[in-house]
Length: 189
Image 1 (cartoon, rainbow, N blue to C red):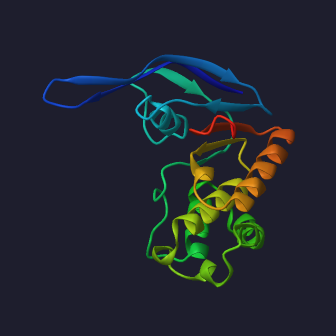
Image 2: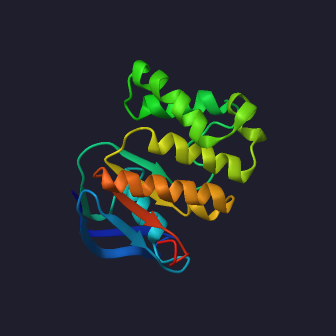
């Protein structure tokens, strides 16, 4: 169960000018549910997801969540561009608390799902945007999260891979994972 309780987030945009990106946001998402967030740019969707992923803290309110959280947030966040895809997967999985054995067991499935071929062992700086998303999505879903947070990641890349990702999200939902999904595409949500 994910519970967001009266979450507000304040930023300062000048010497004393405050901007509230979120005000009193509350909702609960049960295991096996998909919760979609749709809204225009600047509505606070990404800020909320950063709070849920533990990247930033709310100014007010709290988030209660149990289990492993995996997030695919802003494109370009989280990977070291000098490292290969394989090295980045190992590093992020280790930071998520997976054991070396769990990481080595998951690597072939991550490589297979991402469909990067020889680029899996090339520096990420050489990746196209679509390749980056493939790696990020594959790494996130294979960390066996209880909660998966996806921010617009499926808007980039080809339709075949996006459909493959949607099928995987449906399987994760059926297995009891909680999924929070942000998109400008209401049909996809």
